[in-house]
Image (cartoon, rainbow, N blue to C red; front, top):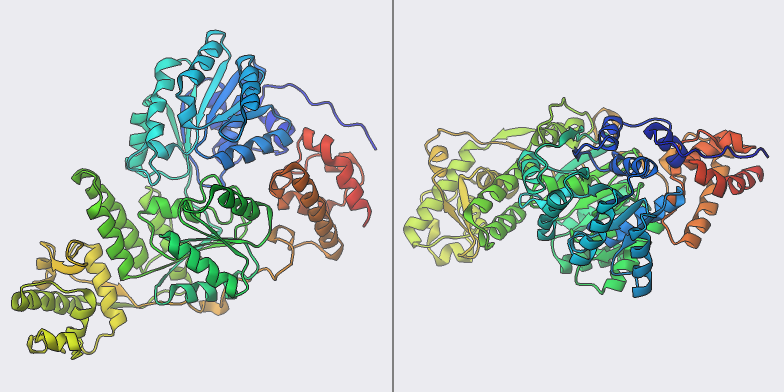
Amino acid sequence: MSALPSPSNSTEPLQILHEVFGYQAFRGPQAPIVDHVVGGGDALVLMPTGGGKSLCYQIPAIARQRAGHGVAIVVSPLIALMHDQVGALHEAGVNAAFLNSTLDWAQTQDVERRLARAEITLLYAAPERVTTPRFLELMDGLASRGKLSLFAIDEAHCVSQWGHDFRPEYRALTVLHQRYAGVPRIALTATADALTRADIVERLQLEEARQFVSSFDRPNIRYSIVEKKDATTQLLRFIEREHEGEAGVVYCQSRKRVEDVAVALQSAGINALPYHAGLDSAVRQKHQDRFLREDGIVMVATIAFGMGIDKPDVRFVGHLDMPKNIEGYYQETGRAGRDGAPADAWMVYGLQDVVNQRRMIDESPAGEEFKQVMRGKLDALLSLAEASDCRRVRLLGYFGEQSTPCGNCDNCITPPQVWDGTDAARKLLSTIYRVQQQSGISFGAGHIMDILRGKATEKVKQFGHESISTFGLGAEFSEVQLRGVLRQLIATGALAVDTEAFNTLKLTEGSRAVLKGEASVALRESVSSPASRSGGKTRREKTPRGAPSPAAAALDAAGQARFAALKAWRAEVAREHNLPAYVIFHDATLATIAERAPVTLEDLQGISGIGSKKLEAYGADVLRVCSSF
């Protein structure tokens, strides 16, 4: 077995990428971002989940530390993310640490002493800690000696009130520019529309920063949105048909819903766990650790779960309730398919989702300007849900990116039928108007539809609404069709939900144009279950339970055996180090090793994901595992 090459102490970014992280080339805009920040420039980076944001500050931190500039401070909002990032850096041979509430006093003092001596390359801390007098004093000491090299502000959308996950503590980070004006800053996020982006620049005083905006496209993700009927049954059918035995995340709006859905999935034999803020913190941590470290677990969660989750093999993200806006939807769906293999973003939604989201906006204590912006963001998401054209074109267009039909979303694979709902819309609005005129009060959607369809229910008879002139005029329309019309009328502002009067319907100024025939209403036919795919593609081919990951699909029988043995070895190492398995090696790295069947350490060099430290730490073990075949 040949001796390993001695690692260099190069400050050249490409050399660091190769030696430390084991990658041969930068991806997308990583190279210009890294060069800009290594040179001392400020940057705002928008890059999709899985696009390699972390390297954009980790490599500059290493390069600037080697050049004598000292410590990089990484502002990170989540403890779990800090742990995994620091663990991955340790595996790569980088001196990293975190300061958070999981450390005892002695451990905290040890980290602070190493920080004060500038012995750490990257230090992770939450925004609340970074802005405390104690931490600022430590940074003052470093800055006075020229040993404060870089500030990286991760999940930067948290600073914006228009962002989908606003955190007031991020606002205090303006102190970094005011107090350490000469230290470069890089703010990073996976999700920000133009309004949020402008707010980040203003709040973090990044007016002079260079902006790097990557494509938001995640071509491996298939977007599908279906009408909600029995959401839990629809979810079960979706998982059983397309993702049996695979890892996924299912988002629900309420804690009770999370618990109920998790129980339903477990009863159906699916390995599901609940996650929400009402659970004991130790239980939440246990569930998150299991999701990250075990295969095939489905996490049912509120949006309290997910930020910073780096698990690469999440094969689907489902939404059983509509998110608040496209940014939240994009951020959450982006947790699927980080490994680049096919994944699904699947959502069910219905009229009640629209009503609930409108009510939450209207009842919030925020000012009217904020409410108007939030209504606009919700309308954009409703437009995406009701669209009959390419989902991806709509989604990317929201972020200002032009694209062409993807051929991979539900609408592209099975173009929906479109029908003219103008007549139905006018009859619905007329019914609402006449009911209010006769009774002096408003009613909900179900009652209005019953009148229009000519259903003489007890309630219709009680109020004498069978005498209204529109009674039975819409008998040709199904309830599903009328609910679609109502959703679109609410989405476009031609109809409103009175949240103070038991979610009843009321006319708006926008109703007039529809009633007068000045506005048309075009709607997609209802789709309530995964459509059969045209062109013989009935559904995505799923990986059978217990089969290798997509990364290893092309291996021959011997390669599959090596891959399975390498995965078993990796699992043991990950347990010993208390880290997710992908932090040791990604599946793609193991698949390349299995294909190459290495005999010497030289055979392992150049494999993506094997840097010098990992080659030194694990090379001999990898060769031993492979030699058994």
